[in-house]
Length: 317
Image (spheres, helix red, strand yellow):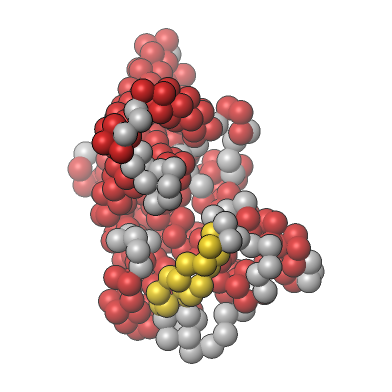
């Protein structure tokens, strides 16, 4: 079974089944490993310089282990049986994708809004964003959901797909380790200012090319959905650079432009207000239906990315 078929089937499994059971999810295991190693490193690293060095060690240990363990598991499986190898490779690739999970969470929030149960909508939103959600009005719930779906179209779908097409399940899993490290320790707060700096920087590096390829794919998807392509191009060129992340601003700016809404603004994190530069002209007020459109945009971007990847493999091999 070729790598292209394995990735296609993995994508199909993600669409049909969503995330596998959490205790057996490799990303959960990676997260537990990070937490254990972080505790061990903090016992010996006390100074700011020591914590920075510990952050580098944490990154290399986690990413290399994710790659080597995945490679060895698949290699061993193939030695036992080619079909077992195909199956393990398929399952591990499938666990790196999050198209169905992302859509389900966003649509769940949309349903709670339509039922006028804002309390449940805020609680569901809190599961997928880092900002405070307990007092958000409808338009801010919609904004947070749209921003998260746009950003995670790259982190959760396009990036792991791209790395899978380049290096199979081992490289895709290594990318997920990079992404998980950023999610767990890549914060600019008192606890992680020193230990998390390297993980945050390397996540930016890992997503640099996928974010730009993903931006092009997103504009193509927007064309199929008959959204405002000119608005998307204009906004990504003028506003993407305003985002604190060198990568997240691209899908968010494109989404704001093609929808004709304004993203960014004031957010609260642990009670501390933070302003994110506005993106988009805000031709109209954001609405719950924009969540549906953004999910469609994300899904179609993923499908186009899958097709592009299969063509890439076909040309390479």
